[in-house]
Image (cartoon, rainbow, N blue to C red):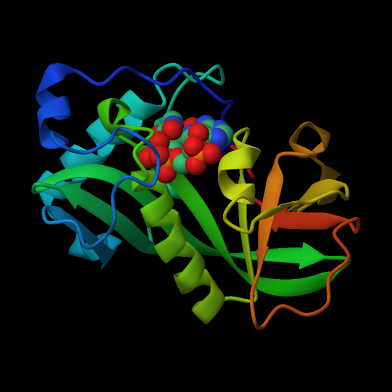
Length: 215
Ligand SMILES: CC(C)(COP(=O)(O)OP(=O)(O)OC[C@H]1O[C@@H](n2cnc3c(N)ncnc32)[C@H](O)[C@@H]1OP(=O)(O)O)[C@@H](O)C(=O)NCCC(=O)NCCS
């Protein structure tokens, strides 16, 4: 899904207490900090309570998104792969999912780790939690896939972590052949991995079809 950069919510006093004694700035937290736990879970390992908490997080984090917020299609797109679930003091605070898709670059099929549903609970944004989650996502994608990909309006958040904006034309593969997705051009980012072939970022790129946002 594509989202725009949005205003950061102000932390409320209750969650501020979680960070008492810490400077409220990005990278202020580390995975070693007591109270932070980052797990990788298959969708079938999520408990009903996890699912409820993740859905609350995603709907809240995307509530101000100009593309209409988070929807059931977006939730479905995040299922079936691995969830990166970060908890602060046993409460789910940040999340990303990686699902497998087949992208084609200049006609070549690439087994791709596609990143979905990246979000931090609004009150805890700007403290480095999303970065911790994405660093783990990067490592996982690099180990398992020929390419990482995602669609976003928040390019800068990912570019600082090594993701690169695709510069070529984008398409979706349908039963009627490839169809142009020009609205997505400039919003698709990729992560090259040790098993990526040489890629020209100005080549055409296509994704497999799915309902909802195809990218
Ligand atoms: C984007 C998001 C996941 C970042 O999570 P976070 O925990 O706040 O991220 P961090 O605190 O690790 O941010 C680290 C850096 O990314 C920057 N950043 C955060 N959100 C950003 C955004 N939407 N666009 C561009 N840069 C962003 C921060 O300014 C910070 O930069 P700095 O290190 O130069 O200060 C979070 O803001 C969020 O949930 N947003 C709403 C949902 C969304 O837009 N998801 C991602 C797009 S698909």
